[in-house]
Image (tube, rainbow, N blue to C red; front, side, top):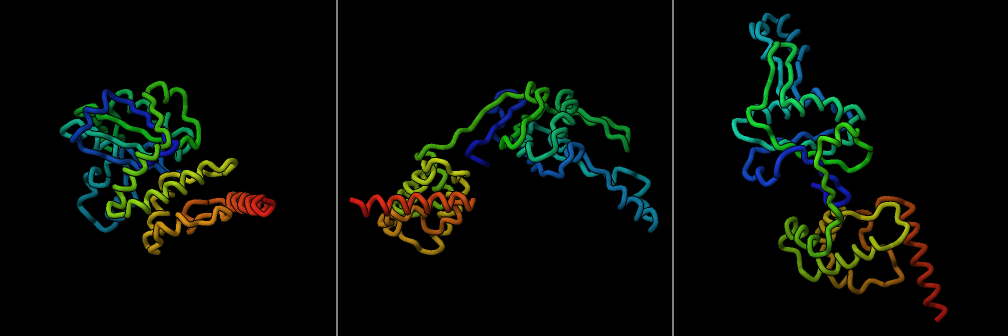
Length: 252
């Protein structure tokens, strides 16, 4: 789950109905096609089995693999379908699902059957806003934007990942993390996932809270900064800021 700059589109009734429901997660990639969420037909395996004389080739159903949408439709109780990071796919991907999501059914051409939802699933769709989604698709969605978490929320997130982290180390790390996010003109501000990775490195290297608390203000780059800063120009920016701080300090 992403916590910064992440959008959630909910194309269903009240999300509270999802409590204790079965969860089906469809992770979208750049190569993902909409039909893969419905089903996939393994024609190659069927051809191979026919050459080997396998009797299963008589029933094409043996070579049809239900996708995540089919699994959610076929659930005996109301299920939750998470379509994660839909904006990674091509522009036509959302539109290719409009008919199925509207009618809650789709046709399996190889068998001639129609798969209908036993119970209308709750569908949660996430986007990192890397590309615009089609208006026709957005009209069918309830939009919710998740803003970057405040300090208290981040502390709770850290506690989930590292329940035994020393409170002073967590506090000092968060201080440095938010100071870094406040630096103007950063190409990419560190996000929650970078914070979690950075803390993992701090713990692995046994870096104490005192090392963060006693950091020289003239050194703008934090220890193990590679987990937080992901662009060379941001490193150069911090180095310039550190140089300017040292020069101003020397003039006093």
